[in-house]
Amino acid sequence: PDEIAVGELATRLKVNVAQVIKKLMGLGVMASISEVIDFDTASLVAEELGAKVEHEVHVTIEERLFEVDEDREEDLQERPPVVVVMGHVDHGKTSILDAIRKTRVTAGEAGGITQHIGAYQVEKNGKVITFLDTPGHEAFTSMRARGANLTDIAVLVVAADDGIMPQTVESINHAKAAGVTVIVAINKMDKPTANPTHVMEQLTQYELVPEEWGGDTICVPVSALTGQGIEDLLENIILVAEVKELKANPNRRAKGAVIEARLDKGQGPVATILVQKGTLHQGDIVIAGTAVGRVRVMRDDQGRNLKEAGPSTPVEITGLTEVPAAGDIFDAVEDEKLARELADQRAVEAKEKQFAAYKKVTLDNLFSQI
Ligand code: GTP
Ligand code: MG
Image 1 (cartoon, helix red, strand yellow):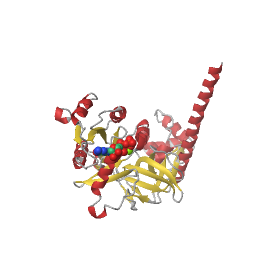
Image 2: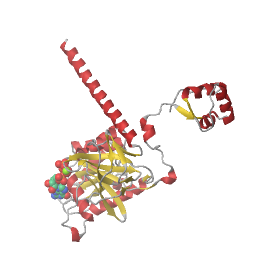
Image 3: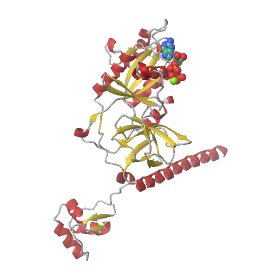
Image 4: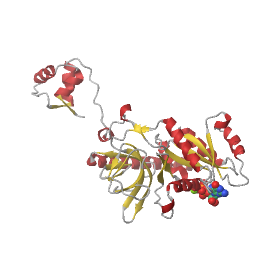
């Protein structure tokens, strides 16, 4: 950032390199095409050659550390949809996630309970779907606050015997603000008091008009209890995902988000992360918020060790220096030293922010006392 190679300077000035070397000689600097000169010398030469010198481009640690974000169209490949299940308390979110999870456990291994990492994948008709289990929408909300979206599709669970309730509305607003497609699962269809038509009528008041009524909202009647409609729900998720043409470049350094994290006595910080683009490998250096480290162990939702994880894959990793926050963005990087520098910088910034907030509070208190 503070220096530039002679050849590079010539390229940027769109002049012959010999001209640059000549000007340098005029300034008493003997430099060949590959030699590096400092910024001040470079701007003198540029001015002499009639170029307007924009002042030094400030290159942040982030820019040095992270891969350029744009992926070319031809590098993009299909990736599984990331689905979150939302809805009012007790309407059956957990039960539906459990019912879906069961669909992939074959009869023979029905007893083998799979490890729970707050996210899992199921396969349906040869397509993979990633489900996030976000208690309290924590990661979902904090990711949105950072302007990044974790999910593609939201399954809105509405109990057929209860209809739309306050948290249903909240979920609808969340989903709309995040621009994710809503699929409605009208749950508890096994109940004699189930009234799906009433639910659909209520939905229209929130601009969710069911397909069968000419709108574009898919409503699937289900019962997490009996399993009715669960396959239908999965098929519709795949359908919506196909329309959305979800893609990511698997051949770049991994980037994604922390779904949840905890401190384990034996393993140290353990984080469940969702790879959004690129491929994460065991041994990769990652930075997540103020946590840095090398991926020591990487496991899938069933506790199996993985060597690598591509786009839309949720994995649990160990090896971070500290416990990151849910919603933190993670990046696989090349330069560990630089990553630590950035982590330190972020920690200082966070402290400053905290301090600023603290100062504000004390000032407010002071004024209120006058
Ligand atoms: P919170 O996590 O507390 O917000 O609830 P939740 O939305 O995850 O609901 P959960 O899956 O815990 O289900 C709440 C209750 O409804 C439980 O007693 C379930 O057994 C029951 N339940 C869920 N799905 C069905 C269903 O399809 N039919 C019937 N009859 N009961 C269901
Ligand atoms: Mg639940």
